[in-house]
Length: 141
Image (cartoon, rainbow, N blue to C red):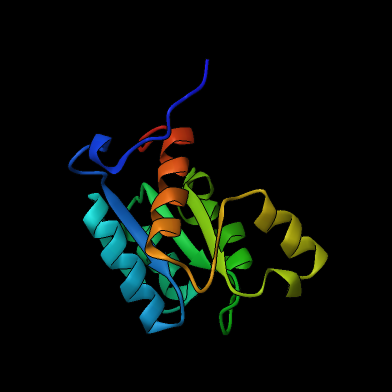
């Protein structure tokens, strides 16, 4: 039995809260607009430290984090997330333009999670999020 891909029209109206963590404002804006159109309420953070503050204050159904950021990397952010709010690591999707530049440890962690390659097309963001939601529905981390 094959599973049909989830269509945007099959999504609930309110998918809960999503967090975008990226040091590039253009990326944060693009991802936020796509996720809002899909039905998420979106918060953004310009770095991992701000992302941890957001997670501490609010539970998120989805977190999209850049891997390469100044200061704390996205992988370090991912590794610290559960210490701030239990179960958060199950809600991660990574984004990066430089997957081949990661060290071995970062690569192993990053490839265990969905990853959107930059520059990302709207359709790629949507499909990655749809696949994630199909495999990890909100509220079932």
